Length: 473
Image 1 (cartoon, helix red, strand yellow):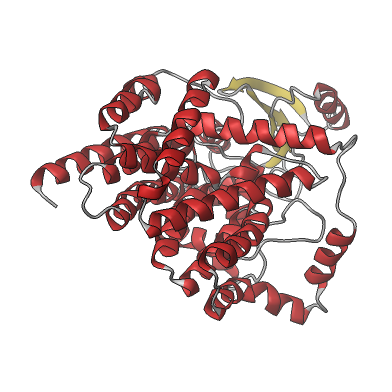
Image 2 (cartoon, rainbow, N blue to C red; image 1 turned 60 degrees about the vertical axis):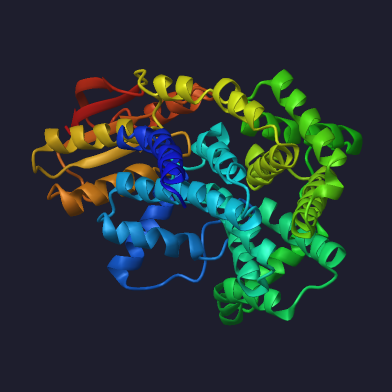
């Protein structure tokens, strides 16, 4: 790589890093029920010296992810002593690495092209979807990083690591991962006319912890999976034609959010451009390019069909792996057409990186789910307690306060000496998060706890979190 290329790549990485880490260092990332639950499990792994064989619940009763998300979190947990900001930095580093991997993938695919790898890396670096998937502690956010590795392995036809990565994608988001796995096997058999046994060995390695758990517990998880297949959940009023239209709109929305900052007109125009270019110049593509393009097209189409026919609920993050594929299509169309001037205009005026960078300087408080707000609340209580034993009552809309359970445990491990006590204490602190969707539930909860001490002080913390200081009578 020549000096000028180093400078361009460094500039792309610098902008990408700023977009990802600005919010993390400002502690503006989400700290929700799921994050608190996961970090409590990781903390338990270290304190009890016991590796779990299961991961988080998939949201379907009796069906769980494997433990790989917990194993991954264990590394930054250990390095940063459980600090959520440090763990978020680790996720951001994975996102930044994905930008570098996009450049490496471009150089692998187009070794003689000086521009296309930079286009691929730049779009990965500043795309709204790619940035937002790099600054939150959430397992589906691993998928864009894994998908770029998947493209590299697919281009090189390395089947064992391809199976490993596919398994990790499934363990990161089960709905997308399951349909992606099936669609990928169909595409490999149709495009490459082969699929090696080592691919399934890679899958088996990833699934082995759950298999061990099942062997120890009379195939409990397997039975639940078979039950789900036999009796899938059906959304109220499911209609196939409506589902086909709904999933198409979701697909189009993912495209627009990835490549056009959510702009429908710009995204649709860009899609037509990419479609025309790839059809027109398909025969000019190398064999590897044709195989990658065909495989990704088949995978996307089958995933669309699978979700359309699936009668259960559908959420936007079920398509978490498609943005990387869309970016690949865009870079491929620019490379084969040679419209690099248009590519620069696109990057500057459609993705608007300068506007995105300047907007990050705006003050933003956020709600109760923002980490800095929940952290300030916990720190404020510990400072007020000033070493005195106290009881803690928490109302959060998810009911179970995993976020505060983790925060108080971590702060007590690293900065303070006292934890909330189980036995009745004269001093009580009450945390009340707003419940905008069901305010009556908060009112009912307060009614139940009205006799738990006399309120002597009440303050509103950032994020509209109310903290009450009470004295037990």
